[in-house]
Image 1 (spheres, rainbow, N blue to C red):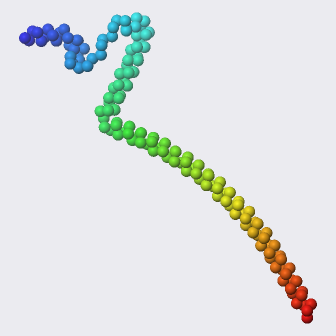
Image 2 (cartoon, rainbow, N blue to C red):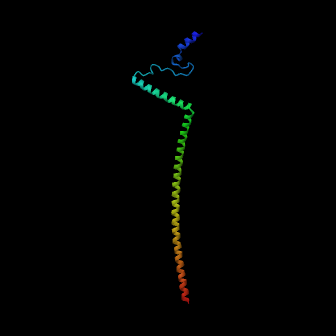
Image 3 (cartoon, rainbow, N blue to C red):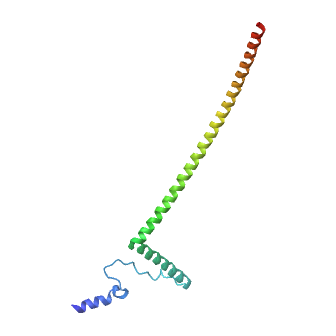
Length: 142
């Protein structure tokens, strides 16, 4: 029985690669998938290394809580910054609109005050003339 086990181990691909026989494995590349040009092979190896590096970094980030917290903090900072920018632009836009409305209202009020001053000056002038005429009339009667 032990002879069968050792024979199976020696013949299984897990014994050659060091992987568990039960774990998921990708299909071995066919001879047609391996580039024959050395330059293409080098590029393929570089690309594979980059993919493996990215996978390792992703797994490392998932396994370490500090890294997850750091990433979450960075995302929250970016969101807060974006929200602050949006709010600032909206407030600035509203402030500009309100300022224009206030300027318009102030101009209308100033024009109205000028018109009222003219009317008041006319009334005062008429009052002075009437007072002068009355004083003259009273003086002549005596």
